Length: 293
View (tube, helix red, strand yellow):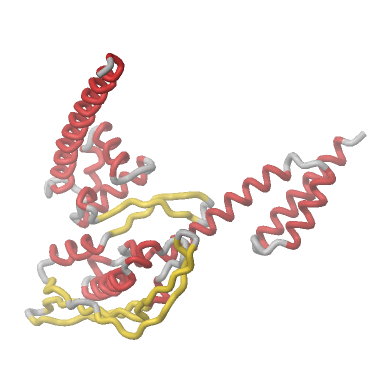
């Protein structure tokens, strides 16, 4: 073994030790954070203030990546109020495109395990049946540049049981494939586990029916996949718009003529977006006219 190799081995050894120590420290801090969130003597709105800055940054690095302090404060408050543990993947803070604000924001999503935990916490949850699938169809999607066929369910029905006045009552809901499948681009898990994914949507629907006060406004990831796929396309279009607007602001007269023709003919943008782009073209035309002697 050469001297250089020994140094490399030593460096790797110390790096591994440092990583192990950091991991141990983080694990201890996570336990502290969990105890603070679970402490029933602390009100939901006060939890954020009970956490140190290093603890808040740890949450941002792990289960709330990219969150602002305001987004994190709301997330922690919801976790506390619903008695959900983000480190157990019962609840997530995920990026979503907000078309009204024209930017990416963070949204709270609850996993199906989180739904079940909230229902169980009520003391009236009496379990549920496995999903019942009705009908099937075949979809085609592209994976690794190959066309593939997949058999998928048309509907999934789930029944949830709840104790009402001492009686076991059932609440049934149905999820339909064409309402929840997010499409080829964002359907990776749906292509691997089509029955499981649709079954989760049906179970979330049934749990909301059974526990409306506890679960109102909460949605499982699988229920929102389709909307996120559409938002992802919109975000991509918006980024393209911003790039094009910057290009137009520096174009020459000849380039503007070309852009004007392409914008008029394109199907990539809707009429409102085309109007905005053509307005920018006209403003650039006027700017060039003023600069011309």
